[in-house]
Image (cartoon, rainbow, N blue to C red; front, side, top):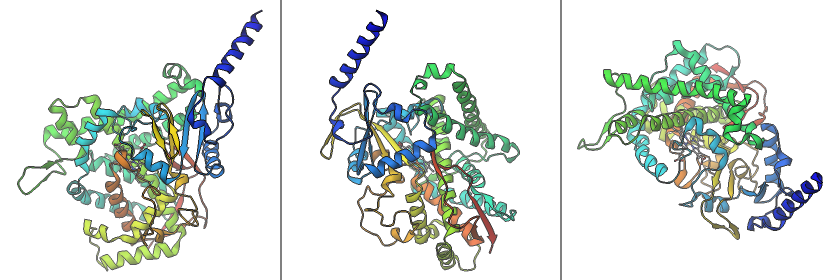
Length: 490
Ligand code: HEM
C-alpha cells in the first residue's frame, strides 16, 4: 500500500513537471532535460575543473546559446555579442544571479552584489573616488609599489611563483590607495592568511554550486563544510575590519591624509574611497555595516582581479620574446635612459603595452563568467525570456570565438592596435552597461605602471616554453598550478 502511494505521487509529480512546466526558453538547445531534476544530475558533484571544461564543451557544441534546466528553473548561457548587448545594456535587469548569494556573508550587499536603489545610491557615491584626479594622486603610490616589487624580484635568481608576489603587490596597492592604509609587513602573516582564505572561500563556493542540498544557508552552516567556510570567512572579515579601524585611528590623529583633490574654486573635494565612506558615515548616510561591505568588496575586486590578469600577462610576455622586445622598445622611446617614474601622460603613450594587456584579458578574462537574475520579461533576439530566469554570460567563450577573433588561441596584441572594427559587446573583460567595472581605469593604470617597470628592468623567461595552464573558476579565473617566470636583470 505504502509503495503504491509513493508511486502515484511520483507519477503525479512527473506529470506536473512535464505538462505543467512549459517555458519559451525550451526552444533553445542544451544538454538533456530530464523530468524533475532537469540537468542537475548530469553536473552533480562535479569538480570545479570538470565543470569549467564541461561549460567550454557546451559553448563549442551549441552555437550561440544553450539552456540548462535546474529543477524547474531555466538558465540561459550566452556567448554571442548580440544577446550580451541586450542583457548588459538592460536598465532594469541588473540583479545578480543566484550563485552570487553565496558571497553575501563576505561581501554583504556591497556594490558588486547589491541592486535597485541601494546599488544606484552607492554607485553614485563611489564613482567620484575613481575620478582622473584621484587616480593621478595614486600614481606615486603605485609607482613606489612597482619599484618595491622590482627590488624584490631582483633578489630571486630562479623562477618565481608569479601570483604570490604579484598578489602582494596588488593587495598593498589597493590598501594604500583606496583605503589609505600601509600594510604592515611585520604582520605579513595576516596578508598571507587573507589571500589563502579567499582561495578557500572560492573553492568552497564552487563545490557548493554543484551540490544542491548545500544551497540552503541553514543546512550549510550546520555542516562541517559550512564551519570550514566560516573559519575562512572570519579571517577575511577581520583583515578588512583591521583596515577600517586602522584608518579611523589615523583620521583621528590626522596621519596619512592622501588623495584629496580640489578644483580651482576649491568647491569639488574628492577623497579616496575609505575616507569618503567614513565621511558619509559621519553624516549618517551609511553605517559601519555598509562600510564593511564596500571595504570587503573593493579589497577583493581591487586586488584579486588585477593579480590574476598580471600573472597571466607576465606568463604570456615571457613566452613571446617579440612582444617583450616591443614593450621594451616602447618604454625606451618614452623614457630613453632616464630612470624617472611614469607619469599619467607616459602611461597614456603606452599603446603597445595597452594592447598586450587587452589581449591578455581577452584570453584570460579575470572574471570569465557573469550572472544575472531577470526581474522583468524581455526579448533576447527572437527568444522570449520570462522574469525569474537566470542568465549566464560567458566572456571566456565569447573572447575565443573564431568569427570574432581569428586564430583565437593565439596571443596577438596587434588585434587591439589596428582598431579592427568589431561588435561593441564582442570584448567585455570589464563587463559593459550600467553594471560595468567601476575600477577599470584604476586597474589599467596599475597594470601598465607595474608591467612597464618590470619590462624596463628585466628580460622575462618562461620555465617551459609554450606551457599553458589548466584553468579553473575560483571567484576569478585561476591557474590550477603555479605559474613560474624567470626575471633576468637587463
Ligand atoms: C583586471 C582587473 C579587473 C577586471 C578584469 C574586472 C572585471 C570586472 C567585471 C567583469 C565586473 C562585472 C561583474 C559582474 O557583473 O558580476 C566588475 C565589477 C566590479 N569591479 Fe572590477 N575588474 C577589475 C578590477 C577592479 C578593480 C581594480 C576594482 C576596484 C578598485 C574593481 C571593482 C569592481 C566593483 C566594485 C565592481 C561592481 C560594480 C557594480 O556592480 O556597480 N574591479 N569588474
